[in-house]
Image 1 (cartoon, rainbow, N blue to C red):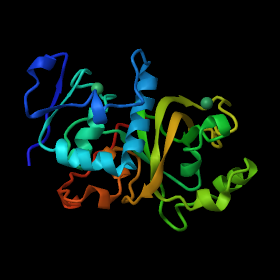
Image 2 (image 1 turned 90 degrees about the vertical axis):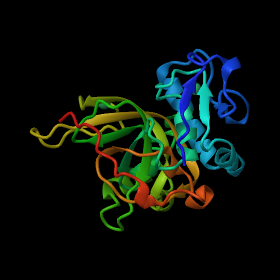
Image 3 (image 1 turned 180 degrees about the horizontal axis):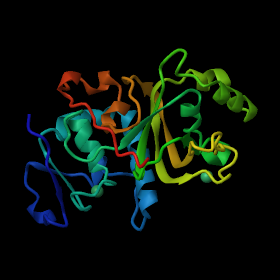
Length: 262
Ligand SMILES: [Zn+2]
Ligand SMILES: [Zn+2]
């Protein structure tokens, strides 16, 4: 099957959109969460919200399968704009084979993973602590670690309880849970309380990964484990049964890790 090509109205005049092309900046495929004049971080947030919302819309998923496969996706954004929702639509039309921009993904131990998807306005966790840094900024798909022992962090359970959250529920959240926007990574300087930790060893740096605009899936999905920060397709957020007729997982190239700064 042919991949959908991505074209832009900045290069393709709307009057010359071919019959094989579909406009995605109007109608049912438009990103309802995006608006003119948004900052870059707001555009990332709108993309995350759109992807999570779309994952739970069976009517939209059906329309994507029937109307976008093999078609050119035309939007007013530049073709290589990674914050355009065409990246989501193109991937959902051809899960795992879409050659365009993928978001990063991160496995987080429980219950920290689920707590990252609680909005900070109601006390949710907005900082992830890591001993390494990255220069990646943008959407990050969040996966709760699955291991019955190694996937759970006792300190996270204690913190979850101290903050008044439902410990059993958040501790049970495995698999793909949703997404958030990684906006900053900086070395610990005694900042970002209460979620930013302080380094315990003088020779071991600690970095605060700052997240904003979390969006939680209505129904989490299963995903194989991985370590580090990897690009993953948006389609991991969608239940497999809603993506019937897809190429088998064996067709998908394994992702390469994103660059670690240290
Ligand atoms: Zn666009
Ligand atoms: Zn900090």
